[in-house]
Amino acid sequence: MITNDKLNKGAENLLLRCAELSSDESVVIIFEDQSLGWYNSDVVETVSKFLRKLGINPTLLKVLGPTNSKNIDVIDAVNTHDCAIFFSRIGDQDRFEVPVHGKKIIMCYIRDNRMLASPYGCCDYRAFGELKSAINRIMTSAERVDISCSRGTSISALLKKEKIEESNDVYVRRFPLGVPQPLSASKMSGDVALCNYLAPTGSKVYEPATVTIVDTVLAEIRDGVILNLSGDYDCVEKIKKHYVEIGKNFKIRNDNVHSYHAGIHPGCAYIDNASDNPDRWANTIFTNPRVLHFHTCGDYSPGEICWMVIDPTIKFDKKALWLDGVLRVTDFDETNQTLQKWPELKKLFEHPSRDIGL
Image (cartoon, rainbow, N blue to C red):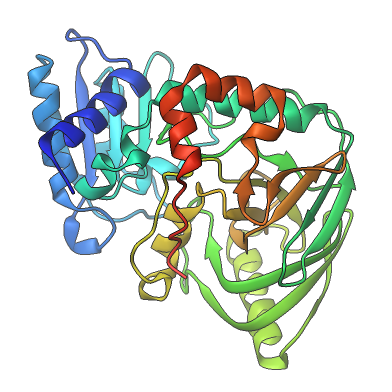
């Protein structure tokens, strides 16, 4: 049930815990037209109202969907305010680029008031910052990773040492915070089961945005390179064509798996059907621990095409951190200590959302 108390808690989490705003800062909210089907205007109204309670009168800038060209109005709005809050996919396009000096940029994956008032919006942003750091330490200290799922994924790699990125694996603040830093897939070999949909990463815009996978297709990988696709002939050909077109359109490499990470936020839920809008589904549900996604097609973060692996088991040095889509936070000292410090985080992991739209 949506209540004013829950909405205020979610807005406070966004504005005071994530954005760390003070009353003397200027804020612009950049939001998509509701008719595009991604964001509901009710969440913009709620956040604007809470900002006014803080003594901040926000600037509101309505935009259309993302394109492959820079939006001059958006650039100007970011440059002339202390903080830019995006309820728009445009905010996701530049998440790996160099940050705008001295500016706070927040990319919101909260689509409406229901999500803002849910545990996804309300559980303390700082708790997930500490959880992310703990998971980063576990992953980057391991020597080997093994990933599997019930649909046929079986892939592994000896891990090269990666720098722990405490907060800036992307150059915007994500709200809610729901994934650890991506790990390189350049040494991974094995099979990945492609199921449900291929989806865009949100970096660039192209049509068709998604490809429906009716029957499982196995992608054979060697040292981060896609060697072969096997499965239903028509589905395989459709996937191959998609990769060729995206590679040609953007003049990028189209045979590589760049990186991967899995969700860490058990409050993330998707109550609609994924088939209604697979692009929106993939761009929303990726923070749920039941979902692992690979970045492919493009030798840069985040690539252009996502593979979504459902209910993965991910083992680091043969110990499962994710087991059949459950993040095993109590099995590791680093993450268990975070749970003990944040009781609401512990409670959330005791009652995780399993709704992922499939």
